[in-house]
Image 1 (cartoon, rainbow, N blue to C red):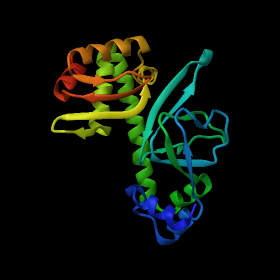
Image 2: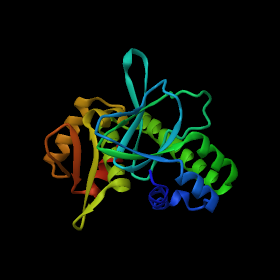
Image 3: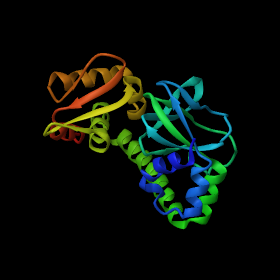
Image 4: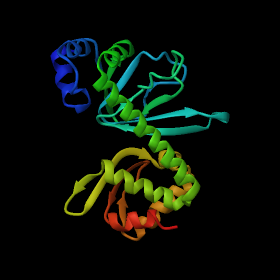
Length: 235
């Protein structure tokens, strides 16, 4: 990947704004760009931890396997998000997998260089700590939702949060969730079943709160954010 092109791409993400000129040179000369079709593995459990990844375009789900080949999806990384950056864990092998949920393009940063910049640049290090804390807070919120919310409320809350954080404004009041994730992925992220997700989405569609077409992936148009939020908090 051309160093000047790499630098332009990386500079479009504010997370790198504190880098020095030498750090920019080091980073842009050593990163590479990779493209993946939907439902392709970027890395799997047991693979060497060689790179930190930045989503340039698309979306990637990160998860792990539990007993009996069950899958737990931990998060979805979107454009501008890091994944595979947990340099604080021990061991040189991946404990998670990363799989695209849409056609995606990622920037691969060598782990060694990423660590070197973190050590040298305290501001950048603090940014990464903030990102890590945000992910931990998301896990805590998910646990609280599991304890205190019913299945429907968790699904509705997930839709509302996704629309609020990642939704595309359509017209005056509507938001489009174009995450490329399936009913099964939503079930994983809300600790429910695929059948429950399908039932809840059909109910919301029937009530004209959301709209979505056929197919396995979810491109959901939220028509009524106020009602969606109210339903997510109903207990």
